[in-house]
Length: 152
Image 1 (tube, rainbow, N blue to C red):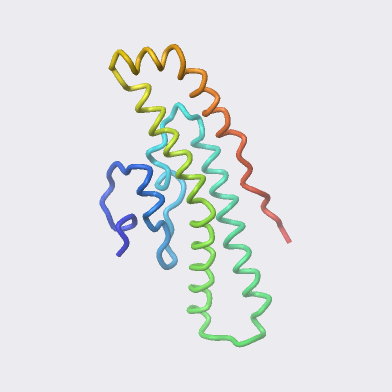
Image 2 (cartoon, rainbow, N blue to C red):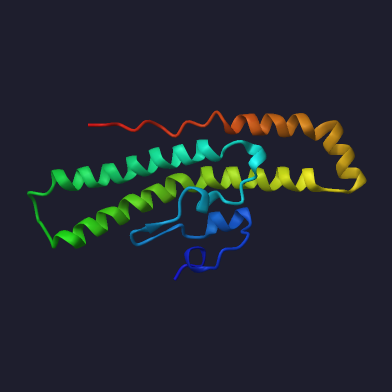
């Protein structure tokens, strides 16, 4: 069993999202479970949940509609075919959302580290130089376009 799906709930570093598998069979980690280390000061929780919904619906819809149009062709056992199609859709979703999710989590990790540092040097740099950079970084996160959900 993959470490990302089978490990107990705990804090995960951003790089674990890159190397871990977020999809296995017809199960996928999504939404808050996927980006839980995101800090609330990013203001992206609801937005990312909506993005996840659009991308997940699009990925599942594409494979399920494609299989429905090919239904007249070689038909295997109904449950197996549907299971495999859902698995394909979830893998597509996982590959599409991996980088966006990692970007959000890594930004929260870096911003949290800088904001939570007590050292005099980091505090000085944060207050004098890093504050505008961090604000710009946070604003860029809101300009992400997850694409459209096409309804046939």
